[in-house]
Length: 431
Image 1 (cartoon, rainbow, N blue to C red):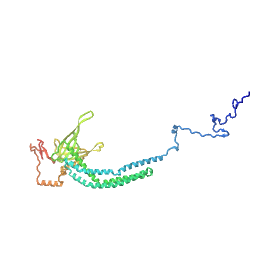
Image 2: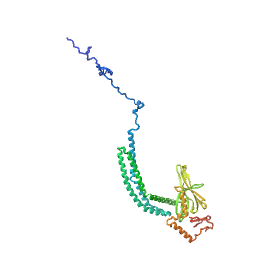
Image 3: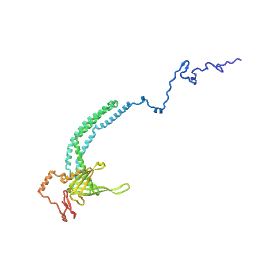
């Protein structure tokens, strides 16, 4: 029997290769060699420390160092300002580009043409409805219709010339705007050109409008007078009284009769013969839970011959908040007091009517100027000469002083009266 040969490294025998060498612990998960230790006669340098994560909360509370603070004006801020300036310039340009076509003044010319064409029709309408005054209306309309075609042609010629000049200037501004999008140094030039374009547009509008400014004012004044007459005729059509034969309406305005008792509101009429006040206001006749029924009270409160007005007083009183408003007060004093007509009446004129305007119209009616302004009447000079000749040729017929029915004394007769009523028997005597 032979003895079994023992394998090396088995049992209690250890090899040299089984012994641990320096550095083997790192390979086999053992303890690492500390930095700076000597391995095999060589010193290992220490590794740099890995930066640790910073707590965000700590970072917020930590005071900033001078190197981390932001500068007061950064390039981004300057870019934002230039972008805003460019956008503003483009907005201004787009507005002026629309104005450079001069479409607004072209519309104005066409509107005036339409107004001139309608003058004859509007005047003929009020004549057909019975308005007999304002003999100058037809003559003034004829002058405007003769003058306007030449002014219209001149204005259109200037408009075409200025439109081409302004369009070229607007195109130049648009070109500069496109370049300024890539070159902000052109913004000042763009701003200057836009202001120049705006000045040129305003100057062009003034030059073209100067051709027909006066004619436009006269057309508007004539149209305002026609509308005033239309309002008068509408009020007479709805009035509770009728005009006398040979009597024609001259003016009307809204007014309030200011008295100690009631202060009714209505309309003040002026004709070639009389002053008439008609009450026109709504009154509540039945109240409901959420509404009320109303009725229009319309009745003549007083009338007076124009010749019976012996004195006229005007007064302007401040009214409204902080006294900024104005009350037009017109006081009429009459020669005689009757049952319907007191000795004096104070009226507050409304609707834009003024004391001066009504004072002038009443005096013109008393002096005969209103009658001379009637259509078909001869000029005032001829009327005066004819009246003087007639007075010299035939003495005026005496006015009636007694009632032919009861022989009672009649009340005084004033200018503008066509009839007089007997105070005792009520008979009407024609004058």
